[in-house]
Length: 315
Image (cartoon, rainbow, N blue to C red):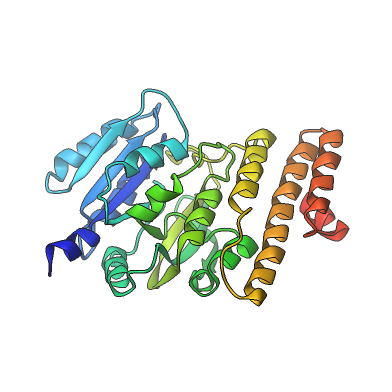
């Protein structure tokens, strides 16, 4: 294998973490267990207030052969800042992945990803399938939802606009495409992934990595050694900034056939309407009826909504 191809297959895994001293080890073990080792693991601790840093440092001492870099934030800056800072240590021309500290990779994902990107050099990013698992009590699996990422490979930007994004922990990016997108915006709105994914999807083909899924784990009980998701803030105003960012990103139409452009416009309208609806719902929950009606009117302007769709959103 040439030096250039080896560089292209370089894979950096970034793990943002905040107050998850019990879960971070399981995530690390899953990355270390890859049948084809990753080239670098970058953990960005976002000013944890528990034993997360100590746990990671002890794990690193017990695994001196693991290429682990631990970065410590002096103050909490949010998941986007943590991800972007970790991505600075990825290799140009290589691959970068972002996995949440409570999620688990299957042991062959790194191998499958490298092979897929080598086979399809035009891909800007690729996603594997994922299982979303809810735990109602320690060791007690509740609901499990299986999610395929095949549609995103087939429909690209249209799939993102119609179906939201296909998951971050199960997605791997080309470093150059990720850097060109500007990375994750610092919104703290619970929507940081979506504008980044939209930008990258507009830049080129999105691939699908078949095989065992990534495990997304959600815990519905207390005292599990983890904080909320780093993007779990639900204030209305960061979401408004997200909508304005999406409007800017989606302003320029991608090239394609006339039928594709029609689908794009329709999907764009429904995507923006969905986000305006979500903002109206948050204002309604906060008791601000006036703002709710203002944002509902914005949703109607997009041409991608109806009154039944709005009422369904408010339930």
